[in-house]
Length: 173
Ligand code: IMP
Ligand code: MG
Image (tube, rainbow, N blue to C red; front, side, top):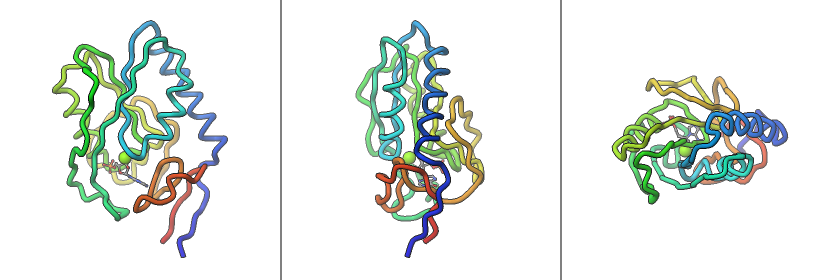
């Protein structure tokens, strides 16, 4: 039977999202921002974050990368499954992911997006998990930092399950 240990409660996640939404709204004040969510894990986080931004002009798009499959360890073989639709040339882009672990996915996605010549790219993640960091990725905005463990809930999955859990839990199989 899988065991779930609470790591971050739902209310705390919401407090942290409000906190970074204020910072992002200040940083991009008067500018147009394109949020690019990384499917599927970021869909809940992005939905909550975008509604707290006080910017007038915000676009939302998604891309999808795949590296885990039904495993808790990254295959380190990142594949782009879905590209963006919005034209980001000359735009300010914020990549929004659920969790940055090895950083390999984010580095891959950022270099992919750089090819479209946006005017800036920054990185926002719900959880910055530096335990297994392998790629030098600069995280500009993070809600929480978690040292280790495989996490589920609030968009994070294990083999596609548990994304709907309202808080974030450590999963022990
Ligand atoms: P990275 O390439 O190792 O940084 O991993 C990035 C992706 O792996 C994230 O966007 C997540 O979708 C997934 N991932 C990494 N750690 C976890 C975890 O603890 N739980 C669920 N998914 C994870
Ligand atoms: Mg992801």
